[in-house]
Structures are given as structure tokens and as C-alpha cells.
Image 1: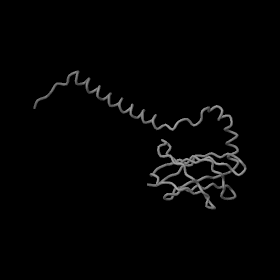
Image 2: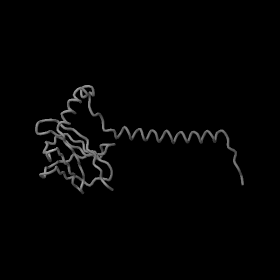
Image 3: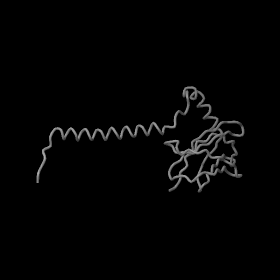
Image 4: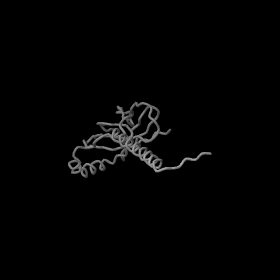
Length: 152
């Protein structure tokens, strides 16, 4: 059996190849992170922060409990308080993954007497976020991110 000598050039090639793989993977992951970033939440966070406490107190004073679930091709949204179901004006709703906006959908809700229902396409298994903006009958703004779990 013939053996080859391990020279400095071989070691340099091994190290160079290893670093090339590491750099290639890092560049791929960085590109994917930037390409799937949904963007800014707000243009001026300082201005938004000035009203945060007052908005949060008004929202908490409503006493709403919000839950959402998926049954087949229907998204159910229940807004409840200590008296019973609440019929709020839904200003906007976006259902999507937490990590990217590629699968985001905008459900159109209708009230069935107890809860809000929207027709949606079949969702993949995992965690989904329903970003909800609604308005109470008294005009109080309500915003919440509701986690929706879809079983495999």
C-alpha cells in the first residue's frame, strides 16, 4: 500500500476548504435573514412609546380575553369579557408565521352570533400569529398578537 505524505499545502487546502464552507453557510443564512425580514413595526418608536402606557391601560380596562383556533378551513376568533362575547369592530387582521411574511393572509371575519369566523386556506402545522387590531363599541383601540397553534 502506498502512503502519501501530508504536506503543508495539503493542510492549507483543508483549512481553506473548511473556512470556505463556514463562510458560505454564514453568507447564505445572512441573505435569507435579510430577505425574509418583514420590516419596521413603526417609523418613530419614541413617539409610539409616549402613548404606550395610556393605550395599554385603556385596553386592559376592557377586560377582553381573546382566543383563536383553526378548524379545517375556518379560523375562529372569540373575544370575551366578564359579561359574555363581545362584538368588536375588527379594523385589521393578519394571520401569518412569526418568522416571515411569505405565508401571510388577511382573513375576512364575519360574526356568527357568538364568535368571529373567517374562511382560510389549509394551514401548515405549527405556530401562527394572528395580529389583530380592533375597536371596542366605546371607541377604545385594541391590538393584540394571538398565537394560533395548528396540529400536524
